[in-house]
Amino acid sequence: MEFDRELRAHFYVTFDDGLCHALGDYHGGVISALVDNAIWFTAAARYPGVWIATSEFHTYIVGAPGRRNLHSQGWLIHAGKRTAVAKAQVETDDGRLVAVGMGTLVVLPHVKLSLEEVLERWKK
Image (cartoon, rainbow, N blue to C red):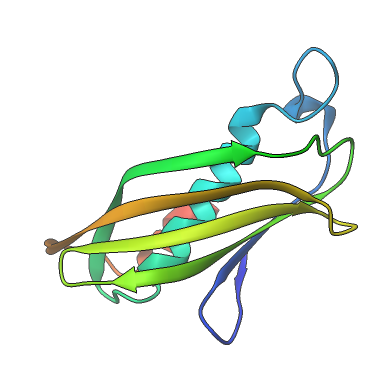
């Protein structure tokens, strides 16, 4: 995972058979997790020291990834006082679109947890 200059989160997954369904391609849950992480971390970067929670998100799988490495990235659409909206896309390492998604996140200012603390916990 990394952030670019616009604070968009990027996730990378190296292909592994353990992430596949019975027909040998990525399980949809892996693709959805890439969308959820891209939207959450992109939005969280705009709310330092405050916890946000995904209230809903949708993933639209538009193509089979095949046995390729995957990359997801997020974009913040709206950053309000109580909610944020973000979108994401997942592509193969050769640039083929696999999925798009969008979600709403709830801002919980009474829960104090910095992005740095989240990243540290996430590494464990």
